[in-house]
Image 1 (cartoon, one colour):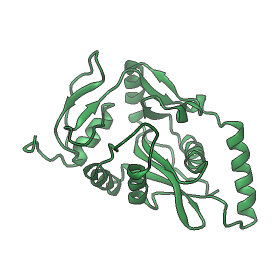
Image 2 (cartoon, rainbow, N blue to C red; image 1 turned 90 degrees about the vertical axis):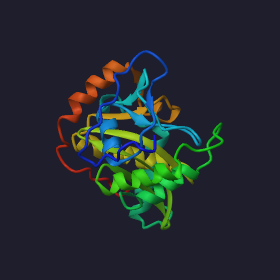
Image 3 (cartoon, rainbow, N blue to C red; image 1 turned 30 degrees about the vertical axis):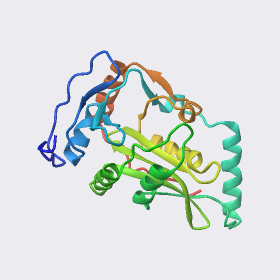
Length: 239
């Protein structure tokens, strides 16, 4: 669909209503800012492989993390406490956490990281370029973990209203992505965040309290929480 129009950020595209099936609503189009924004506003996201058309998904069930169900595994709690102690002692091996400092580095690392059972990445160059533009427009955000001045972990996603749509994460050292995710959730909740969308099941988010809900339940929650802004900007704890 090379002749599909380019959607500016305030243009609206109406996706088909979800039906029973494998979760794919439609295919084709492009990753212009207005089309991406329209997708997320309707509970839809792009996910496709190399040499495939853009596939637009609305899966059933939907995997989400609600603040009321969020919990930190005890081992990770101990790690974060130890990390704070190291930071207070100016230990260069202590993790430090930032947000929106290295978006392009984060998404490129997410694209390049080796994953068990995955032989290629869906985060293709056109996806990277589209989300960098989405970041520049204020919708896509990154959260980073640093150690000795090096980027060692992080994740990125899309923030709209009181909903965060998680996309991908990476770690180069143990606990790097998990640690910044905990700090993010704490800050997100403190800012009035209500729902984290993880799209499809992962063991990683399940350990924090993620669960499957029906697509209808997700869409109802999303509509409710997209209508209201966060009560304050997300302010990530540095350690």
